[in-house]
Structure formats: C-alpha cells, structure tokens
Length: 505
Image (cartoon, rainbow, N blue to C red; front, side, top):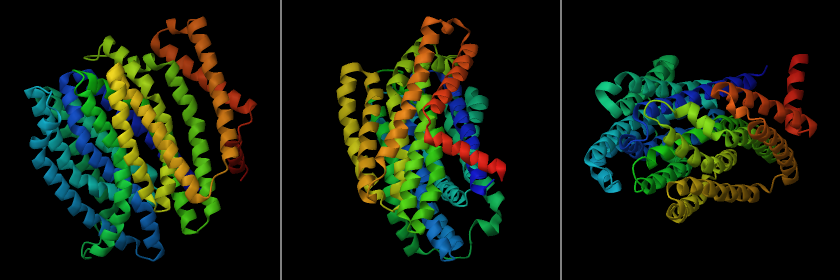
C-alpha cells in the first residue's frame, strides 16, 4: 500500500474523529445552555475572531503547501518554514492584542439588542478567542507543513486536541465559569496543540532559532497568502453577516441557526473537505511538473469522488432530518420545540453543503495555480449576494430565510468559481463529469425512494429512534451501492479496480 493511500485513509479516519468530536462539543453546549440568549451571545461574539482563526488555519495551509514545495526543490524548505513561522507569529501577535483591546468597543455596537449580561458575555468571549489568535497562527503554519509531508492525520489530530479541550472546559468548568468555560477550554487547547507540535518535532527540527527572518521572503509569501486567506474568510464573513441579521430576530435565532448549520455541515467537512485536501498535493505536484492534463484530471476526479460520497449522505439527511436533530441535540436545555425549529433551518441549509463542497475542490485548483485573487473576487460577490438574499428572505420568512439564503449564496459562489477555473485551464471534460453526476444522482434518487417508502408506507418511523436510524442508514447504503453497480458508475469501478490491484500485488 502506497504511503499516500495510507495517509489518505488515516486522514479520513482522523477527520471523522475531528468532526464527531466537534459535533459532541456542540451537543454539550446545547445540553448545558440550549438556545438561550447566553448561547446567542457566545456564538455571536466568537464568530468575529473565529473568522480570523479560520483565515489563518485554512488559508495558511492552502498557501503554505505549494510554497513549501517550491522552496524544497531549491533545498530551502526548512529555511522557508522558519521564515514563515517567525513572520506569522509577529503578525498574529499584533492582531491578537489589538482584537482583545478593541472588543469592549465594537461588540456593543455590533449587537445593540443584547441585554447587559449578554453584552458582557459577548465581550469576554471575543477577548479570549482573540488572545488565542497569536498561537493559532503558528499552529496553522505547522499544520500546513504536516500536510506538505502528507501527514494529514497529524494535522487533523492537532485540531482535534483543541476541540477536546473545549469540550473538557465546558464539561468540568461550566458550573463555576458558565459559558466562559467554552472559550477558556479553546484557549487551553490551542496552547496544548502548540506544545504537542514542539514536542513531536523537537526544538532543532521546529525552526532554526538563530536564522534571522527574511522579511522579503515573508512579504512575498503573504502576497500569495492574503488573497487565499481572505477567500477562506469569506465563508466566515457570510456567517458573521447572518449573525448580525439573526441577532435582531429575537432570542434563540443565533444559536438555533448555528446548531442547524453545524449539523448539516458535517458531510461537507468529512467528504468535501477531506477529498479536496487529499487532491491538493496531487494538484501541486502536477503544477510543479507543468502537467496541465494531470492537473485537470485531478480536479475532475476530486469533483466526482466528492459527489459520490456526498450525494447519498445529504439526501439521507433530508429524509431523516428531524430524527438526526433529535438524537444529536434534544436533551437537557435543548427542548422538543428547539428540535422542530432546528430541523426546519437545517433542511434549508442543505443546499449550501453540496455547493460549498464543490467549491472546496475548485478552490484547490486556484490555490495550486497561485490565482487565489479569482476566488477573492468571487467571494466578494458572494458577500454582496448574501446581504441581498438575507434582507429579502429574512423579511419574508424570518430566521429560516437566513438558512435559505446560505444555499442560494453557495449556488452563486460555486457557479462563479467553476466557470472561472474552466476558462483559465482551457476546460474540463464536462461530458465525463456530467455522465458520472447523472448516474450518481439516479442512484441517490433510488435510495431516497426506498427510504421514503419504508418510512411512510411501512411506518418504520414507529421504531425507537436509535434502531430506526441504524436500520434506515444500513438500508440506504445498501440500496445506493446496488444502484451504483447497476448503473456502472465509473468512479466506483476505479476504486474497486485499485483495491484488486493492491490485493494482487
């Protein structure tokens, strides 16, 4: 078995663990604090520094990987790592201090509808998250470095540590600290994640401590990084815009929308982002070899494999949405009425999962070609579209309109980015992609038809919820894969052929 295949399997498993631990974090928050104004204040405040955190984490990884490859070919990989770590630390430190000091000023202005207690929660939540940014920046560089070494699982593991510490903070400190236990746990997690990287690499392999920072090299890197990072932050900017709208729609709107979005985004994170991340090094190698045919084939495979796994998962969630919300969240402070409302919002969010997963693969193509500015332009258009759609749909159907808006914005964003990359690269084999998508869609519809028949005609939903969900998931998977075999889906054949070749060898 090749090292890349082993790394890919480990990464998929570690991503599953990361996303389910993230879901468990949300379950704990829902159980302890429900969809109250306390949770609203926490989520609204953390959205702002979290945009910077994701700006560093995801953006840095996407920019650093091709940059590291380029310098490694010149024998300067470690030197480049040292320069970017030192430069990023100082930039992140300034942002961290500035954000913490300014939080008491801008939080009350952004969320004037919060009561005094909610405002105080929001301020201190923002302060704690901003203080984490300095460490997050350095962590982000090393996670990009581990990805460049095809150590995907280690990078994901370090993020999982942060989530587990956040969970631990909520579980063990919620009585004395209340909702503050959540951001405090996150801060501890970022420090712990950094120490693990330092211990794993050792001081000598961590950075060249004596090497002076090459400012020109850092500036050159950030010219590439900034468009990528800003593009990554577009999603968070859109979430922030949604939060501003939601905060004016009454208690519970912010937190309930957040719970719905977190739940439906799990398939996107597991399949869309995982496949995009695995494809990225292959695209970078194709670019280094100046092999455009291989590059385009990588994009085509990424889009096909992503849809192969994502389509049935999303469709299954649509059929079982209420039950999914119920089993995940409904306990403690999270009531049955919150379940009903969350299910409605989650149903409307589902389009964004598909479209942003497509966009995740396409984005890797832009970043590999060092044309992230195209993504930034599309991102700016999506922000404008988000404001317009939010204003229209929220005025028509309230908070549910914000979820619906996210799906429309995802559609606009993915269309713009795909057509742009299509023009830049000279086109993809649309007939091949379309044929595969058609077969996968028919297979997915066959699965949905069987599930609906069993649910409503055979009344399988009268079973206890856990056996019911287990039965429906197994049945749906069986029907889907039988349909894939009947319709001779090529991507499935390729996966099975590779497996047989591996067994023979």
